[in-house]
Image 1 (cartoon, helix red, strand yellow):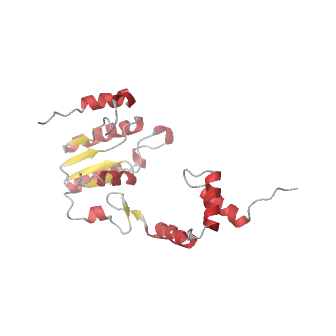
Image 2: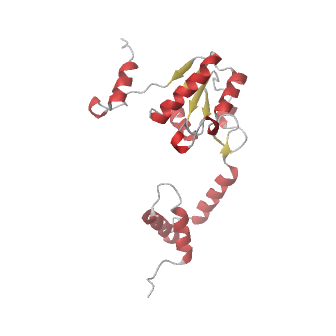
Image 3: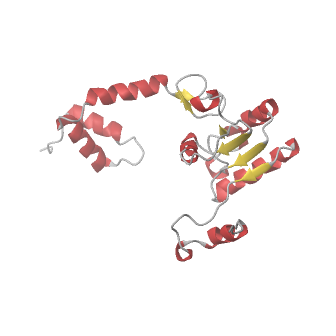
Length: 203
């Protein structure tokens, strides 16, 4: 005798949820059960929100951040200093920088990083668009804010090599000890960078 299972609509939704990153079979089952039985679920609102994102969310034509029009709010904001361009790997890297309220320039999203094992080379990234922006906008500084792992370092070094001929000052974000972190939890590379990027104490 075939064992009982959830009805087909339940199984279909759980199967679709399992396609999402970070959601396994058990999580998909729990989410489906909540959507199907909770009065607070509002599945139609969720469906409408998903459809709205799919239909209206796109990448900014200039920087690659999320936008609902051709250009994002950051690129359209005339109050931005605009003198610097901060290069990041993904669009999701922009908001952590924005939330510091320290950087007031513009951004450029590469759409990834160099990774030969994953067949991601310069042509798969928005490097050509970056070079075109530099020629047009002539920024006063280019800040490389990429990951500190092997692929991030390789991408940083590649960009530095092709951007140096422009004559525009190149900088990269400092890497060191996080706030509240101690030396006993830091790896040797982090400690090395913290020492190399040390700042003078001010009275």
